[in-house]
Image (cartoon, rainbow, N blue to C red; front, top):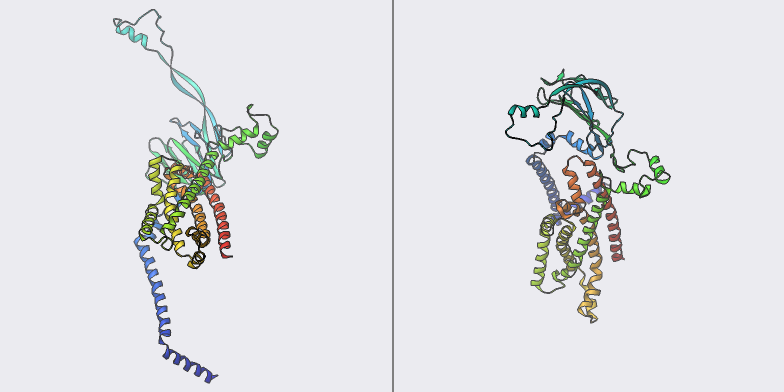
Amino acid sequence: MTVNTMMNAAEMEAIAARHPHLIHGSSRKRIRSALIFAGIALYMIYSWWFFSIGQVLTNANWGIAGTYLADWVSYEVRPDIKIAADGAMQVVYPRFSPLGPDARPEWVKIETKTIERTIDAPAATQQALPKSSTFSFMAPKAAVGRSAEAEVKPERSSEEVVSRATISFNSATSVDVVDRTVTATHNGETLLIDLDPGRGVQPKGDLPDWATQKRPGEKITLAFGMTGWADVDVEKVSIHNRFPGWANFIFDTSSPFFNKSFGEVAGLIFAGERLDPARSNLSLAWNNILYNAEWQHLDVWTKLLQTIVMAFVGTLFASIVAFPLCFLAARNITRNGVLNQVTKRFFDFLRSVDMLIWALFFTRAFGPGPLAGMSAIFFTDTGTLGKLYSEALENIDDKQREGVKSVGAAPLAVQRYGVLPQVLPVFASQALYFWESNTRSATIIGAVGAGGIGLKLWEAMRTNSDWENVCYMVILILIVIFIFDSISNLLRSRLIGQKIH
């Protein structure tokens, strides 16, 4: 065993002496790999320092980010408790509340009382002059004054107002307002707030972590996390109660099917009396879904279809135009250097301008709409596909083309049987990939006025309050992308499979 080991060591030394580059080459490769990894690490450290990534992460307001994320999958009900000068209260809801025009949620408890108020009302009205009489500038001034004046007599009226309002966010969180005192309870902590018209908003004691006040006397914001939040001011307590889900996704508040269960809706559709004499309940329900004022399903689906068509037509025309031009750009097909360079520079010009810039240009030229989007996709993809097609032609196997040429085939037949069978699967695969990719790109260029669902998405984002609508459209786009990606992958694999076999 020792002899064999020594012989092996001796042989290794002999080999190293005869071929030193093998040993030194391996060492150089190890050193080179270590230097590459060290360079990457130094570059990452430099980037972290140069862009102040640590400071950015530290100063980021993750609470706001969480609120925005919650807005995608939830909705808010926003009752306001308005407080008059005499302490009487009123609970009001926004005009377009998700609860409808007659909102009476169970989580809002109110107590009422009747108060008497004194108002000034005219005791008598001025008597009208006879039709035959005319106004005279010569009339005595005192007489004119007495005829224009109306006696004012104070009147007392009874009015029912809210004396106490209790908002229950959940079992651990509530806000109670009574006698200009707000009692906020959250996770076992209680905060008392006095609403003094002279001194402003005055908390009793220290503020807990979930309550903030910028300056003494100003409003206090109560943050309850995912449950919601509230603003407490002297004249108004604004409640924002959050609920999971999408409000009124099927029927809006103006629909006769609003706030009805699935069983009630099904009963009305199949067995109930007609709600609209001009149409069946089924037709009415479908119409209410399509024209839902809050979600605008028909408009969103139409804009999504525009995006799909825009991507398909733009990619199709780009493929058709790039196909003949790529033969002019390929050096092994067209033996003309000037024509090769002119065609390639034309491709460079088309693809060097970003699709978004082309969309802005065509939006100005044609006006907002799908035509601008299709033109932008067509111009950009003509340059990109032309370059990819020409490179595929320059990498073909010339033996097949020479074989067809050797039997005396015409130049067109040489291209048809010697070149196209090699590149057609590649051409089709690339066109399918760009069709799927352009469906995503069409959404982006739509935001600048090129039509489609991108413009609808941008309009919803600009309001900064319709994030559930944004989520709805994003999910639709994802579904379309998943479907098109599956179709594109299936077709490409079949094309490549035919090429292999």
